[in-house]
Length: 227
Length: 301
Image 1: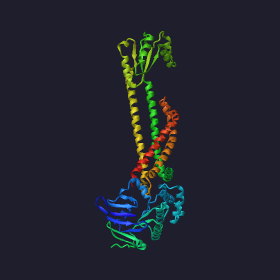
Image 2: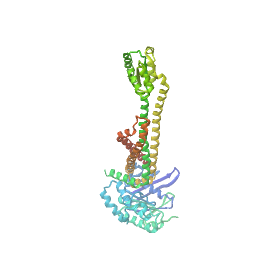
Image 3: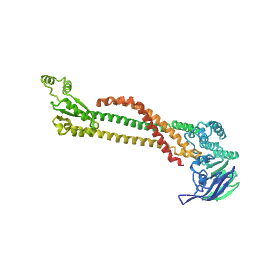
């Protein structure tokens, strides 16, 4: 369970990115966080992955209280979440296989597991035949699928996707969304931050709408409506 | 164990895949190591030159012809007891004549003149060497007392004082200059290498951020860069060592004709292992520290 309790985030003492934001996300949920650019979506993501700390308020992530997370607990915490970004963020000097395996290697998982899991996950994202390629040799859609494979190989509790389709064509966009739905069906919580109206409306899942750093709407089976 | 083997694997992979970045870093490190090695050899050569000059400085005390040998030998013993004195060599009148004859064997006029003389015109002497060239003045002062004046014909220090002082000055300058140059060049080499490695890692700052987001611990991120630094160090030490061999064998004969006591090649071959270990340590430590310090900045993501 993820809980945001009156979370405020200000930058440089006066730029308010989030203003007393509260919401809960249940395990296994598929929640979209929507809003215009600058509404605060990326800040929510950064707080979720502990890239930033809240200025006020509390964030709970399962058993972790994010405000009290120590630097040495960070690696362990991050192994519970899988993150994908608009700009893919793959390790350029590693092959597709190695990028995905890296998430298991940092967690100290044995080689046997790595050899078994990585090809399975690459099968899921239909990239097994490209596992020896480097990211520079892949298309945008393929790169995002590698990022997805890396995010899910650890079987994390939560997948956080920050504008994952921002750099993709419509075909690849739907491929990625279908994969996120599949991951959700397998039991992981999925949090999707996006400003893509078409995707959100087609999903028919929960939608949390942010505007100027505040939650203005929070609906089950929500639609993307910004006045 | 698993983590360590992975760190080594990643370090090796990084080294291989960095391509030109690895090559250019190694070239810079080779230059730094060659400077380091060159400085060691320069100091050895400098020391050789200094001690060779030192060996040539001495004070000779010439005794009047009527002074008995025993008196001179007594004098020798009392000089040997002085803390400043390294050794005292006695040259009797006969020995002095022999040396003179040998030295001038080729010159007929001199040998003929000597043959015509009934008596030995040369004087017995004590050649005194000081432990430190600065102490010749003190020894000369000891010799310049009233009791000895009656026995002593002359002391060479007075004649050679200017030359000795200059040589002593030259030795001091060479020592100080050697140390300053060593420190300066070593500093330059370290700074250049360190910055090259830092730049190589700077290009990886984004990658470090990604690794953190995937849940890699600090040691898991830093480890491979340290391993890479060690690999750079070992290769650089090996290459620079083999590059310096032909250089030394080229310079050595020239140096030998200049300073006969200075056999640089001989020194190099007899100290090869120690020199290589120094170089290896220098390069590896440089690589490790550059890796640690350069990643420090990016580990707070």
